[in-house]
Image 1 (cartoon, rainbow, N blue to C red):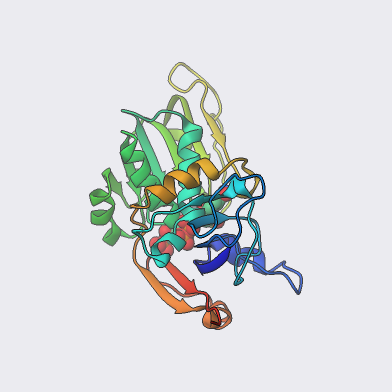
Image 2 (cartoon, helix red, strand yellow):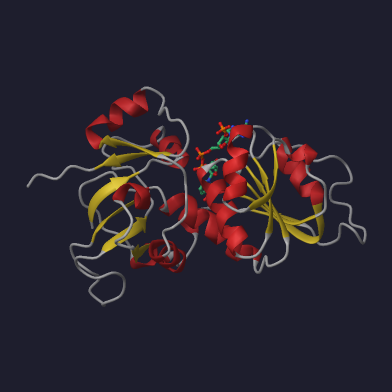
Length: 276
Ligand SMILES: NC(=O)c1ccc[n+]([C@@H]2O[C@H](COP(=O)([O-])OP(=O)(O)OC[C@H]3O[C@@H](n4cnc5c(N)ncnc54)[C@H](OP(=O)(O)O)[C@@H]3O)[C@@H](O)[C@H]2O)c1
């Protein structure tokens, strides 16, 4: 791939701390295929593509597995496409793990995060009644316009039961979200942005007819197989709104990280420069 743009994720930034010298960091991005896979699978030479991979993304060129790349729509800008791979693939994989959510009440905790905003839209498109929790109330109108049927500042004000939940925040919100599940419900604990521990009260796992078969599960995107199916959907239907992007040349990346990776809403996208 000739890399055109990437948008650092919280996971990218956290991984930097333990990365040995010489590492080329960066999980995801967008670019153009220089050379397709030898077996003919995946996007072809000259196509735009969104990609994932555990490292090597913050570079002018990178190699990607065909299990983690898909052709992208030409109608969307590099900046928009760069903000999609990790957040939107995580949200879509979470929803696919939940199975059909048609007609179900699905709670999204941390709905203002990039993953959360994607999850709200994808769950609403899948026919769910989406209950969005975002601590920043100024985001609620936007979340409703993206498909949320209810918005809350904290999980505590959500009335139960919910069929499923996707949680990006962790801490006591995860404990409360689990407690809102009806029988057979699952919380996917995807993120832990609050950085707080979870303490479940006695009785949380005692089952009766109204609480039987509830579960909490998690996954790590980098260990998930065959993400090309999710990327293909996202690349060809790239009309997800992940919020405003701020664009910078990649020569500013180190300075941006050293100053604490500041951003308002949405993602900061770094455009890769190529010598002609
Ligand atoms: N398991 C996986 O494979 C996987 C994949 C992707 C992401 N993740 C994780 O999912 C989480 C979200 O990722 P992202 O890229 O969407 O992050 P993001 O866009 O940076 O957003 C982080 C969100 O967390 C919220 N937040 C931070 N501290 C909080 C607190 N104490 N209480 C409530 N909300 C809090 C922020 O709210 P404000 O905007 O109000 O500050 C913001 O909405 C991260 O923890 C990330 O590491 C996991």
